[in-house]
Image 1 (cartoon, one colour):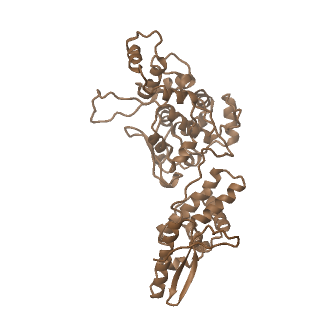
Image 2 (cartoon, helix red, strand yellow):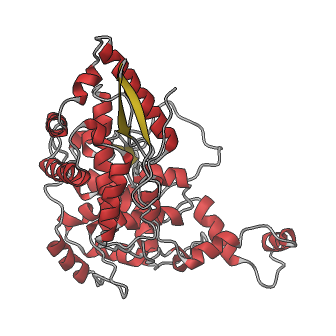
Image 3 (cartoon, one colour):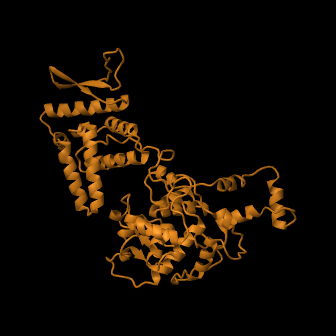
Length: 442
């Protein structure tokens, strides 16, 4: 097997990239530049030698023919495939601009130039310009999407960006830092907004829909007569391209059922509030646009609120990621706004010496200082009715009828709104102060 080697530069230091030689004929060998990773370089050298042997024997493959085509032509074919998939004009415009920049900055002329090393050089340049990790990840996602299309079309045999990871956004600077609304703010926004916009805000707060997803939502996507009503999102509608199904919150379901449904292809909402309109609604509800740290409460911040509220209900990480519909786990973490008291509530449930005696005292009522906060936390996870989610836990005593009764959420709505606003007299152990979502930085 042909081996790879490194070249010594002018200053006596070995260069970062590995090199190899392939035999193109019985008396001719050429040197090729490979990657900075030795294993990947050895694998690529074997592929190049195999292709050279095929050419020498008169055998040509589809991938070899495509290797001679310019990247510009591949990019045009890729964008045309997106148009055939009926992608919206905004997605096409951004995709074309991003891909053009990748070709320019990476100096891509042939498919063989699309490598992980070229992408790292592009990311290094963006980082030196002070651009955020989120901005850098947009180029990574576009490059990966382009390469996956090339592989799916048979234009390349292997994914050269398979080992390229996204930039961690959790500790990175954000140009648009957002905050999660508190329960009181969420309730105030829903109760004080005009009726025609109340439901539009609820779609983000209680279903986590993005602005673009709500714009594309059709009446045919709603399964309102199912035993558990849900939304069936279409692949072309979602950001990750998956046909996701989302449950519909009782409060949101009640507003939908009060409307006259349209034809299956008709939009559920005519428009989504722009920032100018939302500023007026926030002001009407007494909600500050930005907090002391400059984090804004725009429409996408309502999706942050949705994710934070999932944390507060005791939702598992796997379920939260499914509801948020993120392909990468790092993105989900960027939407969590953990609070110190929530972290404390988690560690105070850890076992410790004497915990059994205190738990028994709470059950019998003999302790002079009952652990009410522990009871509150158990109510959040296993209480009979979840004030934040409107869900009901079943004990297994109920019998299953052969026919499902149509779900009616109206009975839980008043309780839900009162709990959000932190008013009312509840006997189920909920504490509105403990349940308030976080306003920490992303």
